[in-house]
Length: 129
Image 1: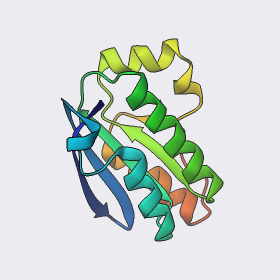
Image 2: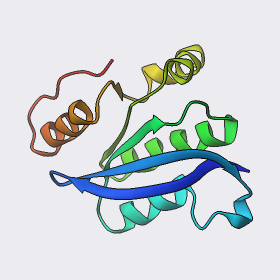
Image 3: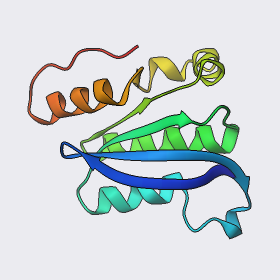
Image 4: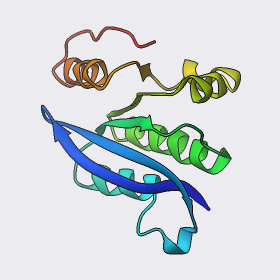
């Protein structure tokens, strides 16, 4: 099972934003996974990625695993994956697992995109959280 019913890719000011929609679907019925989408982006040289979770209220261990692996893959490729629009319950889960110390979380998409732009152009980005 995967927690993502739909992943919509768009570009904002040169930064990839992945809009996640919640819903439980069988992996066989899902045309793509978050990790698969991230791997395709990295293969295209698009390594700075915002995962917008504003439509997601909860994520299971499989979903968290995809986020962590995607973060690691982006970092290993010289980029960065950040989260935005994280619901309170999900933010608590990230804090409990200490993933919020590992993966940058921003309140808004604008802040997340601005942070990745600053990093891409060598400026010092403002911190998350």
